Amino acid sequence: MPRKVRELISDLSRAGFTLDRQAGSHRQFKHARFPGTLTVSGNEGSDAKRYQEKQVQAAIAHVQNG
Image 1 (cartoon, helix red, strand yellow):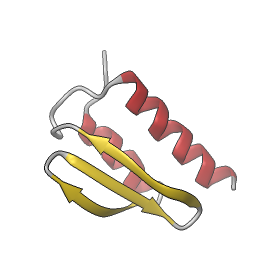
Image 2: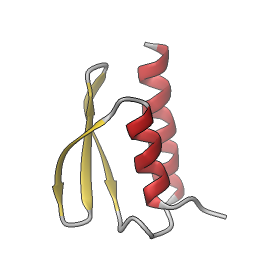
Image 3: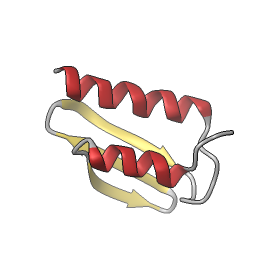
């Protein structure tokens, strides 16, 4: 069962990412140890796409492993 977009946002927040800007359903997150921004799109109650889940996992691993 796919995770919800709100769960991905929560994971990013717990990892120290902050919301940089939002345009509609597209949210861009920043972190001091992550190059650039990470975009998460979709309404909070929508099912997350598999590529979004992988991007979020990779970004969190990047900032935790340095």
